[in-house]
Length: 118
Image 1 (cartoon, rainbow, N blue to C red):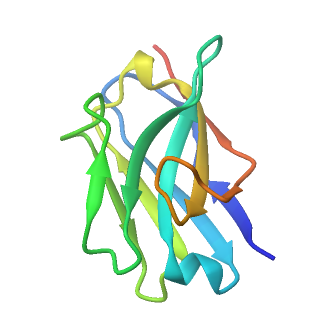
Image 2 (image 1 turned 45 degrees about the vertical axis):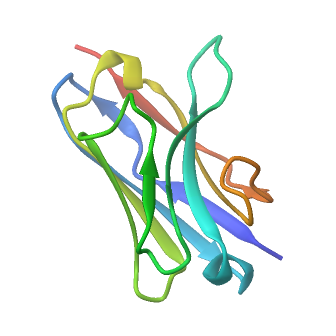
């Protein structure tokens, strides 16, 4: 059984930073990709960033490239998303996911709300 629990969301002003965490259980996550997705009000869920099993490969959506950094710990069970220079357009529920294929995860977390507003 795979469980993914996100934390670190909140309300911040434009230009601020936040760090999201995703704590995972189970061996599945150690052997597969982990990724962040987000869903803004009235919009479809979209890919944000992903990291490979080893942590050696990362991918980012163009909208966050240069501002967000994804990483995972040495045990490969916790993933982080460092978000800098936040914009109002980054407001969304952020979901942690894991799977064999980046854009089609097998498991999802419950999500954490990020709101960027002055």
